[in-house]
Length: 398
Ligand SMILES: Cc1ncc(COP(=O)(O)O)c(C=O)c1O
Image (cartoon, rainbow, N blue to C red; front, side, top):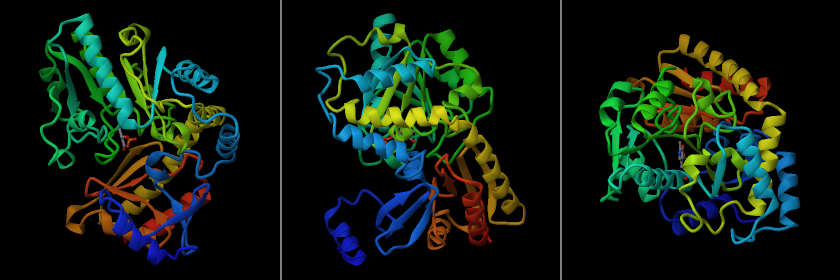
């Protein structure tokens, strides 16, 4: 077996330098636990960036992977395949939507939503109606269009000119959104909770307010549930907290618990502008990945795991707030369900060194937006695992 030092040397030599990776090489996982190439064990509070909601190597997911791998991997969308049809049906039965388009990532799901919004607005209204109003501090992906939709210059720098037709307004500010929407607005694009931007939960009137603005103007309301979907925030989809429905929703990350997939969901009338040949993907919704997603979604639905996310999220957040109460380094603990941010006060430095110390003590967590440690453990986390982590988090934040 290649030793860790050599692996890290080769990584530095052969990879494009797009990631600031932690200096460990992970080789195995089970539940919340992962092991590195030196045999060290960690509790994974990142879920691989909110992906492995069921934990690593969940038996139902592994079983589905094994069965699908021996049955049929790929046929392209020239043909129908049963798992893709079953998954579309299940997603429709458990959301506001009537129709589903499958792709391979969150960015691609958002690309599909943006293309749909432009086509819908042009066909239903006028040819110069193509703008999308998104929010500052948002994150929607790394393709050119989703990067242009993302409201953070640090990701856009160097890649200009960006795709035309995007405006950005402050998040959780209905007045600013109202002023930005005009006769050229095709859609409003928002995360129900900003994840990558530092875990920001908007006021409970925000999504209903956006719904009203969209209804009045004819703009589509697109919710990006790439990070918040699949039970993470305490409901299957985060829009459910607001009691209103979007027109379009994008999903990815946890949908197949680690096998790459994305999906764009919408209502019948809107989907009708996508006729054969208008959009597509070679790999989108292969029998393999949709079998794995079916196993994942069914496991989440059977176990009502969003309820567990609410319960365990409250437990973890109470524990973190107790740490905050006796601790001057923490400005605020915020989040919903098992999407939690701990913001470090600026005078105590950025969040990164705290994440490095957590890793030394056996917890994987990722900083986001300079000051925030993001905790997004698998939804199957136990109380014992939460306690074990809280004990170490308290030490690191002391
Ligand atoms: C809200 C949101 N949208 C889109 C994306 C992009 O997803 P992907 O990396 O799968 O393209 C992310 C990734 O973090 C995300 O958090």
